[in-house]
Length: 318
Image 1 (tube, rainbow, N blue to C red):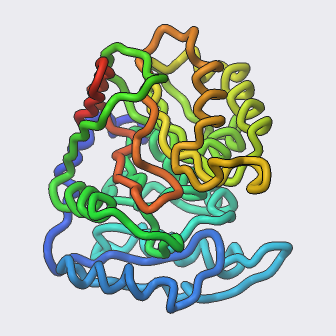
Image 2: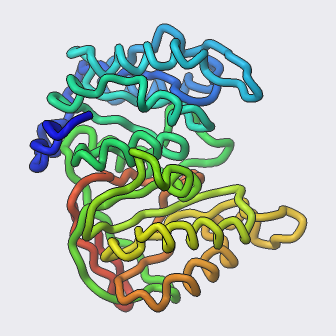
């Protein structure tokens, strides 16, 4: 990428909204997937009136210490084709896992950034979110086509459809004892904390000022959570944020040692984050339903939001 991409600073989110019979590409840039894992998501696309189009290498398996959905060349080709195809109006990633970061420098993003479309996913897809949000291209942090083995909330699907079809969404959630009150506006960035941490120092690390940082994670040790927060502090990211939204932290640390292992908002993780962030003079909300759970509401990363944390309620307006 080069400096020409900084001209896309006032992208109209509503211009990205999609219409009935528009095509949605399904590709897997990370871990391997099987047809039966995507059946429900593909049917949902059809039920919403859109047309699913699967990538050429969607169900490939390439093993190199990890089962990828094809080798790097195959995964890059599928993503490049989806980005460049004018008939594709959104790209919905099949799953996370690992592998997205391998593709970032292999992709030619120029045509996509001149004519962006929604990229949808979470977890490992954070690599794409962070990279493109640096160029003021909004992306959708939402469920992947493959679902977790749990019950999903209606809001998970409704919030995604709302953003896809209107380009807008607002949220109001209950307060939390750890919340720090305040009001601010800024660009929403972030995603999976492990990915944010791993991108520090790279071309895809989170850049910019006056940011509102969203974080979520699962299956991480508590001491590693502190390590990641310390990394973001030492790298200067926390000096550039004006607010924080804390999502789901699920199945954290050791199942035999954590009595709240299945709690979507792990109390010990929340205590660690609260103690780390409590001296920052910024609004912070805990308990936002987004992450590795069945209540994973769609957030438009890269968009400017108004963020208000009150005594009893939290409001997020795009």
